[in-house]
Image (cartoon, rainbow, N blue to C red; front, side, top):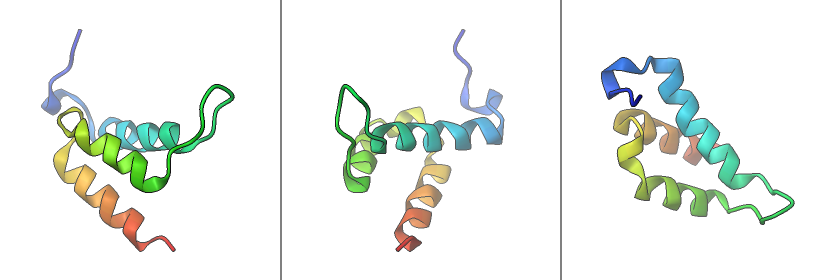
Length: 66
């Protein structure tokens, strides 16, 4: 069963972005990790899977991290 955007609560939409980013940037035994830029490139290609406003805010937040 696929949920529509309005059916997914805010914590779930935030977690989806953070979980994907973490998965892409964490090294695994079977693959190297992506750079932060590489991870955002992949997520941006799949932007229809995420809340667009939250994704923009996530990217802004990452830009502030040194």
